[in-house]
Amino acid sequence: MANILSSAKKNRQRIKHQARNAAQKSAMRTAVKKLRTAIAAKDAAQIPALLKQATKLVARLGQRGIIKPRTASREISRLTCATHTHAGA
Image (cartoon, rainbow, N blue to C red):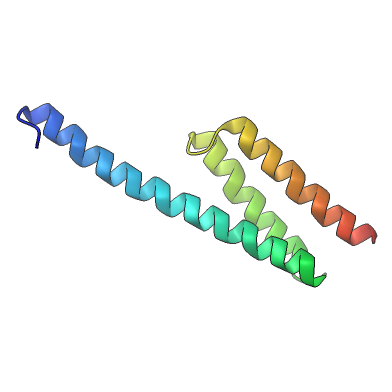
């Protein structure tokens, strides 16, 4: 336990931020997983909506620094490529 008030406050903030970041990362992973499942199942009806949702979440987390911006860009690129490869096949 922190003895200094500012340290205690910073600790409380850290706990809240970690929880928020974990929840947002989890939501992103779930969206990506749903998209990859739809691509594997060749569900052409759902893929565009799921791609939009997943890329939106990934881009937002990259902008906010929850995941690294280049990681976000790479993930969006790979998802888009996988989607378009499925559409072409």
